[in-house]
Amino acid sequence: MVLVATGRFNGGPAGAAVIGGPFRLTDQDDRPISDTDLRGKPFLMFFGFTHCPDVCPTALFEASEVLRALGPEADRTAVLFVSVDPERDTPAVLKDYLGSFDPHLRGVTGTPDTIAAVAKAYRVYYKKIPLEAGDYTMDHTAIVYLMDKQGRFVAPFNMKRPPEQAAADLKKYF
Image 1: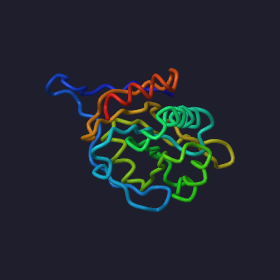
Image 2: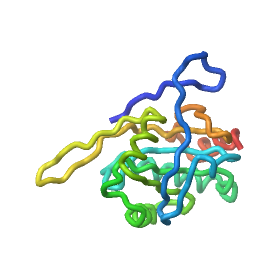
Image 3: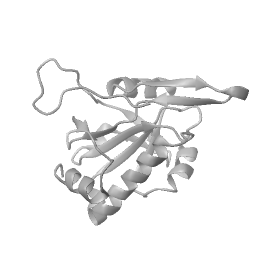
Image 4: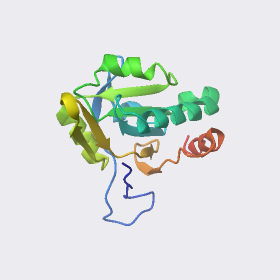
């Protein structure tokens, strides 16, 4: 499922919905990470889950390709994969899952309440969908959020283009 984010872009109308905000989560190395840790560099945020069959691994592969295209400048940005499935996506599960992607990617999780608060701040929809035999999947917003150096939402980041082009666009915010 893909939903469109609307919100206040730089110079947007007064009173428009704001996307983003403070957060304090735990990364795949079981270390705390907050929005203030990312200040001073633009970053991309994507909400998903490790059991996702297609959208999430595709987005993470595309983000890995952008980071590869940035080369050494990849250290000047961050990419966060925020789990909307904290029940299954522990730091250890995230670490194992992200082993297939660029090492700059950081997977983050938290308590269900913390994830709900972050999702609300970013206007992210997610819902647990029961499957047969007690299993489940997650519906969720599939947008990559571009945040500026101050942690403010800029725009949805288009990953469906050549990695070099996406990397050049991201560099504009360094």
